[in-house]
Length: 380
Image (cartoon, rainbow, N blue to C red; front, top):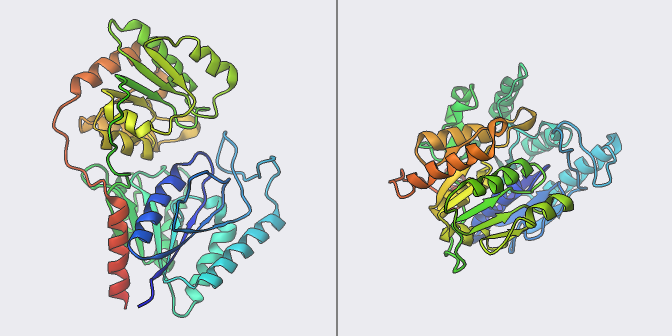
Protein backbone atom coordinates (compact mmCIF):
# COMPACT_ATOMS: atom_id res chain seq x y z
CA UNK A 1 0.00 0.00 0.00
CA UNK A 2 1.43 3.41 -0.97
CA UNK A 3 2.11 6.08 1.65
CA UNK A 4 -0.66 8.65 2.10
CA UNK A 5 0.32 12.01 0.64
CA UNK A 6 0.06 15.15 2.79
CA UNK A 7 0.35 18.73 1.54
CA UNK A 8 0.99 21.28 4.31
CA UNK A 9 0.64 25.03 3.62
CA UNK A 10 2.47 27.39 6.02
CA UNK A 11 2.82 31.17 5.66
CA UNK A 12 5.04 32.66 8.37
CA UNK A 13 5.04 36.46 8.46
CA UNK A 14 6.81 37.67 11.59
CA UNK A 15 9.07 35.34 13.56
CA UNK A 16 9.37 31.57 13.19
CA UNK A 17 6.76 30.25 15.63
CA UNK A 18 4.29 29.07 12.99
CA UNK A 19 6.85 27.27 10.83
CA UNK A 20 8.54 25.73 13.89
CA UNK A 21 5.27 24.22 15.15
CA UNK A 22 4.21 23.09 11.67
CA UNK A 23 7.61 21.48 11.13
CA UNK A 24 7.21 19.38 14.29
CA UNK A 25 3.84 18.17 12.97
CA UNK A 26 5.27 17.50 9.50
CA UNK A 27 8.15 15.50 10.98
CA UNK A 28 5.73 13.39 13.01
CA UNK A 29 3.70 12.72 9.86
CA UNK A 30 6.84 11.66 7.97
CA UNK A 31 7.81 9.42 10.91
CA UNK A 32 4.37 7.83 10.66
CA UNK A 33 4.87 6.99 6.99
CA UNK A 34 3.18 9.96 5.30
CA UNK A 35 4.74 11.37 2.14
CA UNK A 36 4.87 15.04 3.21
CA UNK A 37 5.21 18.14 1.06
CA UNK A 38 5.41 21.48 2.87
CA UNK A 39 4.71 24.70 0.98
CA UNK A 40 6.06 27.83 2.68
CA UNK A 41 5.54 31.44 1.73
CA UNK A 42 7.85 33.37 4.06
CA UNK A 43 11.58 33.95 4.14
CA UNK A 44 13.77 30.84 4.37
CA UNK A 45 14.44 29.71 7.95
CA UNK A 46 17.53 27.50 8.40
CA UNK A 47 16.65 24.07 9.81
CA UNK A 48 12.98 24.14 8.83
CA UNK A 49 10.98 22.18 7.85
CA UNK A 50 13.56 19.44 8.51
CA UNK A 51 14.77 16.21 6.88
CA UNK A 52 12.46 13.79 5.12
CA UNK A 53 10.03 16.48 3.98
CA UNK A 54 9.73 17.80 0.43
CA UNK A 55 9.86 21.59 0.62
CA UNK A 56 8.41 23.98 -1.96
CA UNK A 57 9.03 27.71 -1.48
CA UNK A 58 6.56 30.18 -2.91
CA UNK A 59 7.79 33.65 -3.84
CA UNK A 60 8.56 34.85 -0.27
CA UNK A 61 6.49 37.57 1.37
CA UNK A 62 6.71 39.08 4.84
CA UNK A 63 4.84 41.74 6.79
CA UNK A 64 5.97 44.88 8.54
CA UNK A 65 6.71 44.78 12.26
CA UNK A 66 4.01 47.38 12.87
CA UNK A 67 1.12 45.25 11.66
CA UNK A 68 0.00 42.22 9.71
CA UNK A 69 -2.17 43.83 7.03
CA UNK A 70 0.34 44.53 4.24
CA UNK A 71 2.62 42.12 2.39
CA UNK A 72 6.02 42.96 0.96
CA UNK A 73 9.20 41.22 -0.11
CA UNK A 74 12.53 41.39 1.71
CA UNK A 75 13.38 44.61 -0.16
CA UNK A 76 10.20 46.34 0.98
CA UNK A 77 8.41 46.09 -2.37
CA UNK A 78 4.66 45.80 -1.84
CA UNK A 79 3.03 42.67 -3.26
CA UNK A 80 1.00 43.70 -6.33
CA UNK A 81 -1.68 41.93 -8.37
CA UNK A 82 0.92 40.31 -10.63
CA UNK A 83 2.80 38.96 -7.61
CA UNK A 84 -0.43 37.62 -6.15
CA UNK A 85 -1.18 35.83 -9.42
CA UNK A 86 2.30 34.29 -9.55
CA UNK A 87 2.00 32.91 -6.02
CA UNK A 88 -1.50 31.57 -6.62
CA UNK A 89 -0.36 29.78 -9.78
CA UNK A 90 2.66 28.33 -7.93
CA UNK A 91 0.41 26.98 -5.19
CA UNK A 92 -2.13 25.46 -7.58
CA UNK A 93 0.69 23.83 -9.56
CA UNK A 94 2.02 22.16 -6.39
CA UNK A 95 -1.50 20.91 -5.60
CA UNK A 96 -1.87 19.42 -9.05
CA UNK A 97 1.56 17.76 -8.98
CA UNK A 98 1.19 16.37 -5.45
CA UNK A 99 -2.36 14.98 -5.73
CA UNK A 100 -2.53 14.75 -1.92
CA UNK A 101 -4.77 12.58 0.20
CA UNK A 102 -4.86 15.25 2.89
CA UNK A 103 -4.21 19.00 2.82
CA UNK A 104 -3.42 21.06 5.92
CA UNK A 105 -3.59 24.84 6.07
CA UNK A 106 -1.71 26.34 9.00
CA UNK A 107 -3.78 29.11 10.70
CA UNK A 108 -6.23 29.65 7.82
CA UNK A 109 -9.18 30.33 7.89
CA UNK A 110 -8.81 31.46 11.53
CA UNK A 111 -5.86 33.63 10.55
CA UNK A 112 -3.78 34.62 7.52
CA UNK A 113 -6.62 36.56 5.93
CA UNK A 114 -3.98 38.45 3.94
CA UNK A 115 -3.44 35.28 1.91
CA UNK A 116 -7.04 34.89 0.72
CA UNK A 117 -5.95 35.89 -2.81
CA UNK A 118 -4.24 32.49 -3.11
CA UNK A 119 -6.01 30.39 -0.50
CA UNK A 120 -9.60 30.86 -1.67
CA UNK A 121 -8.73 29.59 -5.19
CA UNK A 122 -6.72 26.84 -3.47
CA UNK A 123 -9.80 25.74 -1.49
CA UNK A 124 -11.95 25.78 -4.62
CA UNK A 125 -9.40 23.66 -6.48
CA UNK A 126 -9.34 21.12 -3.64
CA UNK A 127 -13.14 20.99 -3.63
CA UNK A 128 -13.15 20.21 -7.37
CA UNK A 129 -10.57 17.38 -7.18
CA UNK A 130 -11.63 13.76 -7.65
CA UNK A 131 -10.84 12.01 -5.44
CA UNK A 132 -11.16 14.97 -3.11
CA UNK A 133 -8.46 15.32 -0.43
CA UNK A 134 -9.46 15.69 3.21
CA UNK A 135 -8.82 19.32 4.22
CA UNK A 136 -7.72 20.21 7.75
CA UNK A 137 -7.06 23.53 9.47
CA UNK A 138 -4.11 23.49 11.89
CA UNK A 139 -4.42 26.14 14.62
CA UNK A 140 -2.82 26.91 17.95
CA UNK A 141 -4.80 26.65 21.17
CA UNK A 142 -5.38 30.41 21.62
CA UNK A 143 -6.45 32.65 18.75
CA UNK A 144 -6.11 36.37 18.25
CA UNK A 145 -9.53 37.81 19.09
CA UNK A 146 -11.26 39.27 16.02
CA UNK A 147 -12.61 42.75 16.61
CA UNK A 148 -14.11 43.34 13.17
CA UNK A 149 -17.76 42.43 12.67
CA UNK A 150 -18.38 39.42 10.48
CA UNK A 151 -14.88 37.92 10.63
CA UNK A 152 -15.82 34.97 12.86
CA UNK A 153 -18.93 34.30 10.79
CA UNK A 154 -16.80 34.23 7.63
CA UNK A 155 -14.44 31.73 9.27
CA UNK A 156 -17.34 29.46 10.26
CA UNK A 157 -18.74 29.57 6.70
CA UNK A 158 -15.37 28.57 5.21
CA UNK A 159 -14.92 25.74 7.71
CA UNK A 160 -18.40 24.37 7.09
CA UNK A 161 -18.04 24.53 3.29
CA UNK A 162 -14.48 23.31 2.83
CA UNK A 163 -12.87 21.73 5.90
CA UNK A 164 -13.13 18.14 7.08
CA UNK A 165 -11.77 18.90 10.57
CA UNK A 166 -10.06 21.63 12.61
CA UNK A 167 -6.95 20.48 14.47
CA UNK A 168 -6.59 22.50 17.68
CA UNK A 169 -3.04 22.12 18.99
CA UNK A 170 -3.86 22.43 22.66
CA UNK A 171 -4.91 20.57 25.79
CA UNK A 172 -8.50 21.17 26.89
CA UNK A 173 -7.46 21.24 30.56
CA UNK A 174 -5.35 24.30 29.75
CA UNK A 175 -7.36 26.16 27.11
CA UNK A 176 -10.49 25.65 25.02
CA UNK A 177 -11.07 27.05 21.57
CA UNK A 178 -14.32 28.72 22.63
CA UNK A 179 -12.34 30.93 25.03
CA UNK A 180 -10.99 32.94 22.09
CA UNK A 181 -13.35 31.94 19.25
CA UNK A 182 -16.93 32.71 20.34
CA UNK A 183 -18.58 30.79 17.48
CA UNK A 184 -16.78 27.52 18.23
CA UNK A 185 -20.12 25.87 19.01
CA UNK A 186 -21.14 26.20 15.36
CA UNK A 187 -18.24 23.98 14.24
CA UNK A 188 -18.03 21.76 17.33
CA UNK A 189 -18.49 18.62 15.23
CA UNK A 190 -15.31 19.42 13.30
CA UNK A 191 -12.94 20.18 16.18
CA UNK A 192 -10.21 17.74 17.22
CA UNK A 193 -7.80 18.53 20.08
CA UNK A 194 -4.32 17.17 19.51
CA UNK A 195 -2.52 18.25 22.67
CA UNK A 196 0.31 20.80 22.69
CA UNK A 197 2.85 20.45 19.90
CA UNK A 198 6.13 20.39 21.82
CA UNK A 199 9.54 18.82 21.18
CA UNK A 200 10.64 15.97 23.42
CA UNK A 201 11.78 16.91 26.93
CA UNK A 202 15.33 18.29 26.75
CA UNK A 203 18.38 16.63 28.24
CA UNK A 204 19.47 19.19 30.87
CA UNK A 205 22.60 21.09 29.96
CA UNK A 206 25.73 20.54 32.05
CA UNK A 207 26.10 24.34 31.88
CA UNK A 208 24.01 25.52 34.82
CA UNK A 209 22.31 28.91 34.92
CA UNK A 210 19.87 29.79 37.65
CA UNK A 211 17.91 32.13 35.36
CA UNK A 212 17.57 32.08 31.56
CA UNK A 213 16.19 35.29 30.01
CA UNK A 214 15.07 35.13 26.37
CA UNK A 215 13.26 37.43 23.98
CA UNK A 216 12.56 35.38 20.86
CA UNK A 217 13.49 37.27 17.72
CA UNK A 218 14.80 40.13 19.84
CA UNK A 219 13.43 43.29 18.23
CA UNK A 220 10.17 43.38 20.20
CA UNK A 221 11.66 42.13 23.49
CA UNK A 222 14.17 44.87 24.34
CA UNK A 223 12.04 46.29 27.15
CA UNK A 224 11.82 42.83 28.73
CA UNK A 225 15.59 42.30 28.46
CA UNK A 226 16.46 45.66 30.01
CA UNK A 227 13.98 45.30 32.85
CA UNK A 228 15.19 41.79 33.66
CA UNK A 229 18.86 42.84 33.76
CA UNK A 230 18.00 45.83 35.97
CA UNK A 231 15.89 43.59 38.24
CA UNK A 232 18.91 41.36 38.75
CA UNK A 233 20.67 44.24 40.52
CA UNK A 234 17.78 44.53 42.98
CA UNK A 235 17.96 40.88 44.07
CA UNK A 236 20.23 39.92 46.94
CA UNK A 237 21.55 36.62 45.56
CA UNK A 238 20.56 36.46 41.89
CA UNK A 239 22.82 33.53 40.97
CA UNK A 240 24.24 32.95 37.49
CA UNK A 241 22.19 34.31 34.58
CA UNK A 242 22.06 33.66 30.83
CA UNK A 243 20.54 36.45 28.71
CA UNK A 244 19.62 35.54 25.10
CA UNK A 245 18.67 38.61 23.09
CA UNK A 246 17.67 37.04 19.79
CA UNK A 247 19.26 37.87 16.42
CA UNK A 248 17.28 41.03 15.64
CA UNK A 249 18.33 43.26 18.54
CA UNK A 250 20.31 46.23 17.21
CA UNK A 251 24.06 46.28 17.81
CA UNK A 252 24.07 49.25 20.20
CA UNK A 253 21.42 47.70 22.46
CA UNK A 254 23.20 44.36 22.44
CA UNK A 255 26.51 45.98 23.34
CA UNK A 256 24.84 47.91 26.19
CA UNK A 257 23.48 44.66 27.64
CA UNK A 258 26.73 42.77 27.10
CA UNK A 259 28.67 45.49 28.93
CA UNK A 260 26.69 44.65 32.08
CA UNK A 261 27.75 41.00 31.92
CA UNK A 262 30.46 39.46 34.02
CA UNK A 263 31.32 36.33 35.91
CA UNK A 264 27.68 35.70 36.85
CA UNK A 265 25.85 36.93 33.73
CA UNK A 266 26.50 35.87 30.13
CA UNK A 267 24.83 37.66 27.21
CA UNK A 268 24.30 35.91 23.85
CA UNK A 269 22.43 36.65 20.66
CA UNK A 270 21.52 33.00 20.17
CA UNK A 271 22.01 29.63 21.86
CA UNK A 272 21.29 26.49 19.84
CA UNK A 273 21.01 24.62 23.17
CA UNK A 274 18.31 26.95 24.52
CA UNK A 275 15.98 24.09 25.48
CA UNK A 276 18.81 22.21 27.22
CA UNK A 277 19.66 25.37 29.19
CA UNK A 278 16.03 25.56 30.34
CA UNK A 279 16.27 21.94 31.45
CA UNK A 280 18.99 22.79 33.99
CA UNK A 281 17.67 26.26 34.99
CA UNK A 282 15.55 27.22 37.99
CA UNK A 283 13.67 29.97 36.17
CA UNK A 284 12.83 31.16 32.65
CA UNK A 285 11.95 34.80 31.95
CA UNK A 286 10.40 35.19 28.50
CA UNK A 287 7.48 36.31 26.40
CA UNK A 288 4.48 33.99 26.20
CA UNK A 289 4.53 32.67 22.65
CA UNK A 290 3.23 29.16 22.01
CA UNK A 291 6.58 27.52 21.28
CA UNK A 292 8.48 29.21 24.11
CA UNK A 293 5.83 28.23 26.64
CA UNK A 294 5.90 24.64 25.37
CA UNK A 295 9.69 24.59 25.81
CA UNK A 296 9.39 25.93 29.36
CA UNK A 297 6.65 23.47 30.31
CA UNK A 298 8.70 20.57 28.92
CA UNK A 299 11.77 21.72 30.84
CA UNK A 300 9.86 21.92 34.12
CA UNK A 301 11.51 25.12 35.35
CA UNK A 302 9.69 28.03 36.98
CA UNK A 303 8.41 30.66 34.58
CA UNK A 304 7.92 34.44 34.55
CA UNK A 305 6.08 35.64 31.44
CA UNK A 306 5.85 39.11 29.90
CA UNK A 307 3.39 38.60 27.02
CA UNK A 308 3.77 40.54 23.77
CA UNK A 309 0.78 42.88 23.56
CA UNK A 310 1.68 45.60 21.03
CA UNK A 311 -0.68 46.40 18.17
CA UNK A 312 -3.71 44.94 19.92
CA UNK A 313 -2.25 41.43 20.20
CA UNK A 314 -4.19 39.36 22.74
CA UNK A 315 -2.98 35.78 22.24
CA UNK A 316 0.10 35.82 24.49
CA UNK A 317 -1.70 37.65 27.29
CA UNK A 318 -4.53 35.11 27.28
CA UNK A 319 -1.97 32.29 27.51
CA UNK A 320 -0.04 33.96 30.35
CA UNK A 321 -3.20 34.62 32.36
CA UNK A 322 -4.33 31.00 32.05
CA UNK A 323 -0.91 29.64 33.04
CA UNK A 324 -0.85 31.86 36.11
CA UNK A 325 -4.36 30.71 37.07
CA UNK A 326 -3.12 27.10 36.94
CA UNK A 327 0.01 27.88 38.97
CA UNK A 328 2.27 27.13 36.01
CA UNK A 329 3.75 30.63 35.68
CA UNK A 330 3.71 34.21 36.89
CA UNK A 331 3.11 37.03 34.46
CA UNK A 332 3.56 40.79 34.18
CA UNK A 333 1.69 42.93 31.67
CA UNK A 334 4.00 44.43 29.05
CA UNK A 335 2.73 47.95 29.80
CA UNK A 336 3.49 47.54 33.52
CA UNK A 337 6.98 46.08 33.28
CA UNK A 338 9.57 47.68 35.58
CA UNK A 339 12.72 46.31 37.24
CA UNK A 340 10.85 46.25 40.55
CA UNK A 341 7.93 44.29 39.05
CA UNK A 342 10.31 41.79 37.46
CA UNK A 343 12.24 41.33 40.73
CA UNK A 344 8.98 40.64 42.59
CA UNK A 345 7.83 38.26 39.84
CA UNK A 346 11.11 36.35 40.00
CA UNK A 347 10.74 35.76 43.73
CA UNK A 348 7.11 34.64 43.39
CA UNK A 349 7.83 32.33 40.45
CA UNK A 350 10.79 30.69 42.20
CA UNK A 351 8.66 30.13 45.31
CA UNK A 352 6.14 28.22 43.12
CA UNK A 353 8.77 25.90 41.70
CA UNK A 354 8.23 22.28 42.62
CA UNK A 355 4.46 22.50 43.03
CA UNK A 356 2.45 19.69 41.45
CA UNK A 357 1.42 20.63 37.92
CA UNK A 358 -1.62 19.27 36.06
CA UNK A 359 -0.82 16.59 33.52
CA UNK A 360 -0.81 18.16 30.07
CA UNK A 361 -0.72 16.33 26.76
CA UNK A 362 2.50 17.66 25.18
CA UNK A 363 2.72 15.10 22.37
CA UNK A 364 0.50 16.95 19.92
CA UNK A 365 2.64 16.28 16.85
CA UNK A 366 2.39 12.50 17.09
CA UNK A 367 -1.25 12.71 18.17
CA UNK A 368 -1.93 14.73 15.01
CA UNK A 369 -0.41 11.97 12.89
CA UNK A 370 -2.56 9.37 14.68
CA UNK A 371 -5.74 11.43 14.22
CA UNK A 372 -5.07 12.01 10.52
CA UNK A 373 -4.53 8.27 9.99
CA UNK A 374 -7.82 7.65 11.77
CA UNK A 375 -9.70 10.24 9.69
CA UNK A 376 -8.30 8.79 6.46
CA UNK A 377 -9.38 5.33 7.54
CA UNK A 378 -12.92 6.51 8.35
CA UNK A 379 -13.13 8.29 5.01
CA UNK A 380 -12.08 5.15 3.17
